[in-house]
Length: 112
Image 1 (cartoon, rainbow, N blue to C red):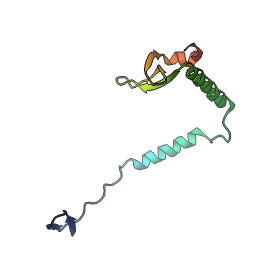
Image 2: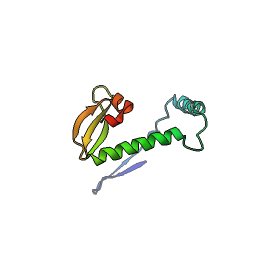
Image 3: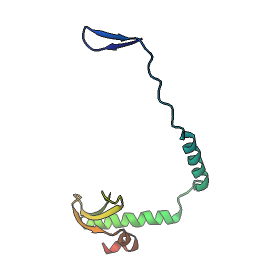
Image 4: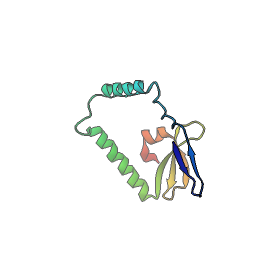
């Protein structure tokens, strides 16, 4: 029996059974096993951050600082039609100045 309070003097009482919660998708187990397999393929998590990663983060930080000193920043977004990542050189308020090809950012970000 379910009682539904409607906030008025009338209460609705219905007989019946509540619907059962939906069953998990049939492929839920396959997803979990695929996730576990992917974890196994990736290997161990390194105990320390590799020096190359630290160097890349420092370079990116230095570039961000240099752009901020000039009153600029790089912002990334997703193109509405293609779904690809797009980079724009913007002022510090986020107003785009020009689109920057990702290859330019990777090859020589100092040319911004």
